[in-house]
Image (cartoon, rainbow, N blue to C red):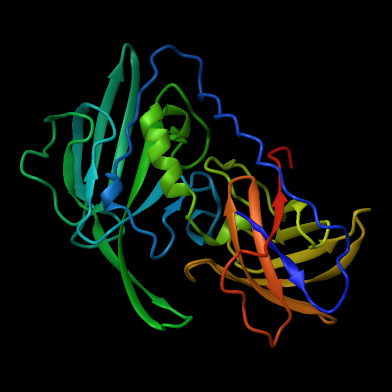
Length: 331
C-alpha cells in the first residue's frame, strides 16, 4: 500500500522523483519439499467479495486475538449473502458449531494428494448446504453455505453500525509442524492456482487492516517478536526520505512513528493513529510534540502511498499527490 507527501509551507526534503514500478514479489516457497502439492482455488467467487471492513486479513499478522502465534489463515470479507466455496476437492471431515459465533458453523475438508494430507477449514457459515455432511465428497468451487454476517461500529462519517459477512479460511499441511497453536497451519498463498492468484490479487489490492503498517505481506511470519518495526523508504514524491513504524506489543494498537532524513537521522517522532475501516482509504494521524499531520494511505504488500497535510487542514480526499514508499522483507 502507498504513502503520501507531506503538504506544508516548508520546501520538500528532497527533489521529487518519479517512482518506477514496484519490483515483483516472489511467491513464498512451499512449507515442505514433500511431494504432493495441493492446488487451491479461492473460496469466494469474484462477485461475492466486499471491502466494507477489511477485505482480506492476511496470514501471520499479530493482533489482539492473534498475539501469541500470529493469524493462522485468511479472513475473507464477503458481500452479505455471499457463498463460501470449497477451495479444493476432498472429503468433509466435520461440520460443527462455530467456536466463536453462536448459531454459526465450521466446515473442515480433508484433501489427499498422493501420500500428502491437507485440511482446509471454513468458519462462521450462517448455514450449510444440503449434503454438506461428514464423509461427503466435494469438488473445488462447490458451495458450502453463506458466510455469516457480523457488525461493527464505524467511528468516522457516516457514523453508525456497519454489517459485513466473513469467513476465516485456513490451510493445514500435515507434513509441516511448529510447536505453537495450530502447528500445521500454513499460508495458502503458495498453493493458489494461477487463476486463483489473479482473483486473490484483485481482492488484496484494496484490503486494509490495522497491523499492515508493520506486517504488510500476504504471508507474514508467525514468529514475529515485539517490539516490531518496519521502515518504508521513499521511491517517489516530496515526503520525508523514510518512515519507520513501531508496535511495542502484539496486543496493543498503539503505533509509534519516526520520519527519517536521507542520512537515516530521525527528524520527527510521535504516535500514529490509524483508522483502517475508513473508506475509500484508511485514515492516518501523526502526532508529535512539535508537529503533526493528517492523511490517508494505501498499502499493497511492499509498496505504500501516503498523502499527508497539516492538522487543521482538510484531510486529503484521494492519493493523487501521494508519495510512494517501499519496504523489503529482510527487516
